Length: 325
Image (cartoon, rainbow, N blue to C red; front, side, top):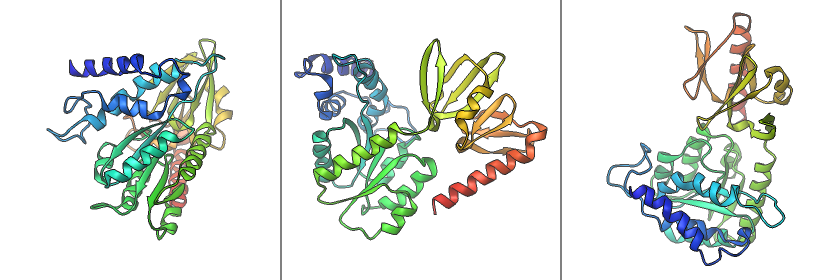
């Protein structure tokens, strides 16, 4: 019941917000942070194994309401010209000093690109709840008690190769390691507004330019980020796309018609009716001769493709290992 009330409170906060008559793109990101912070979340409302019994679940409540806020505020509201407005970048801020996190939040509130942020007081707290695709950008302090930021980033890169990462630090001694971990940028403390603005613009450009699969569903064109796509499956005259959030997209079409869009990307067709994203393959099940996918799905490998499927997966793993240094 309290969770339902929390959702209602977000709606009320938005409707009653003193700047509600302003163009939505002028509302500052602090509004969203304040809306979530003003909600009351029962302990464990967000059912994630990283939340310990009795621990305050409010920081994780953001993850529950994030899609609701995007849907209600950004995705369904257009400006006077009828143009869809920019979705906010989803940020994770990890620093063991509350005052440093607050400084970053203040800079983000003044930035020209909208953001929504979740705070973490140490690396362990972040790793407990981190999931592939939850964030667009991670602002990570390096020197923290317990696990360092660099150590945490190594673990995060094993889960998510796409997320943009920036170190916030007083030292640049980790330059070589940052390169190996594909860290986008250093933000030297005290962090400047210009550096934050430049970083957000860079992340936004990367987000807009990520490879996408263009499809037509119910007469409407959709552009699906390939990093969100696990598998394409042909069933009779329909195509079924399995997404990494567990959802599926179904529409009329032929798999062969979409394959040219996947050229040069880490996709492989182990069977005439399937094409998989190798980034989400956990291994090859020799007993059943199939790819074991990250979502638990087993994708069959046809007999003629067994050797090619094995080689494609091994080549992908080798290339990824080499890229990560």
